[in-house]
Image (cartoon, rainbow, N blue to C red):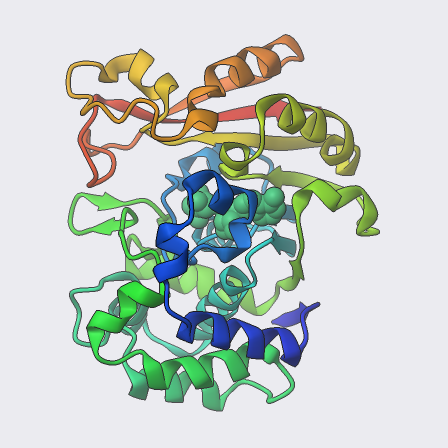
Length: 330
Ligand SMILES: C[S@@+](CC[C@H](N)C(=O)[O-])C[C@H]1O[C@@H](n2cnc3c(N)ncnc32)[C@H](O)[C@@H]1O
């Protein structure tokens, strides 16, 4: 496994300070301010994406540019054959999470990994002793190692966890909700483990809006998760179709938007019956309808993913087809 991180020890120190600061200011800040400065938000430990869209993208031997976020989709890509990954996130603490997941995969068994990082009900969840075991294998030169060495002391008691991370777990509700393939069963986990050993992962702390200035080459797959929720529609469309697309190789595939279930689009599909009235909670998400149309005009297919459990997230339940990814092929 080869890992390159573009952030310094100084950044990791700042990240530790940030977590130790009271979150009160953030709660008091208007939501729009937080969205403007996404880097201030609590990082997301778990994916909220159903990684099944990966099946409809190129995989074997491909390169991937992705928003790091919870990192589970990236691990699923590598598990399906992707070798070279560039993971970007404006929130450096998301990169530390990705880093931790990689090293945890390297050193833990399936049950240990699930207990430590996926299932908050487990006795192993974020356990200091497990941190220590993982950290012993990591060279001191990695800034994320410093971050986690500091964090693991603060992680207990469990109540502290909610202060450090966005702790709603949409990824894993055994037995019926497991959104990432690699934690579905032991074989899938071991395949991910094996493939990660041969992968090259580069972490970039940065804003996708500056992608044109990062000196990146072209990629076979690009995954932007739901970053479009945090950038105004028109600006996002332009960013994707110009700067981001210019990094897509000639037969590449891009997922410019993942639509999570509380978007109006989801509501329009099958969900109105059980929709719990969250309309307006996220105006940019609500505008996604327009975004879908824009991408359709330039040839995007909207692919739906039946999550299989018919309930989607644990926030509230929806119809059968609750998640969608917009997929564009060059
Ligand atoms: C709500 S999370 C999405 C979680 C994701 N769907 C997953 O399954 O892991 C949004 C992610 O995008 C990142 N992000 C938001 N705006 C960004 C930007 N302009 N540039 C880079 N990353 C950004 C956030 O830091 C966060 O990691």
